[in-house]
Image (cartoon, rainbow, N blue to C red):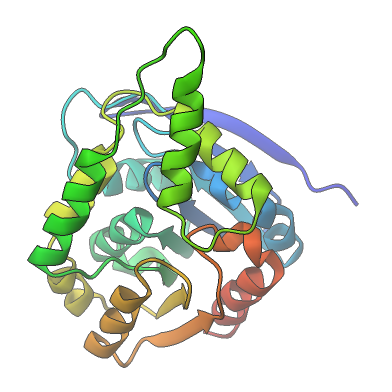
Length: 267
């Protein structure tokens, strides 16, 4: 039986916000890393839908097919966009999943509407020290910005750039689609990182009062940060997959989906 899927937009504080709905069932909202889009979860949509979820994936402002923000957003700004979507769709008893920057957004959102949250999954929460944030931001700032040139060599540079930020990568399709998602960024491509690194994630994590799982994989570039978040909140369920990179949804789709559904169907 074919799983239905549709795309739509709502108005947000930053213009049009794009989202995609797959399947019917218990609402599960997915929020991506930076600089990416809802496509990072695309291989999981049908499997999640067949497990009884209505999968709602969102392009945060400036990424994918959502309009670019007209100023530097905060994590709360992004969270309010997701909150607006929940209200627009009239959703109740919602589950949230965010990856990296998306984990910051969904953690913040869980504080805004705890009474409406069924479960929260923080996939690779970037619980970093000020020094770690500064070092990462410096690396991101120093990465060459894409400037189109006549011979198309800028596309090779972008490919090499993403490869360098994905040590141990093995999935060619994931790398290809990751580069495409980077090409679709509008405005300042690193505004998601800036917002995430400006949030006091430790304070937010300590305030969460909904059923929560930290999901990670040992090959993630910030695996150590997820472990740190688990130590901060040992009452949260902790689940890790072996190996992989930040493209884990593509690399281990079935295992990733199982971790998600096991938690949400048993909490």
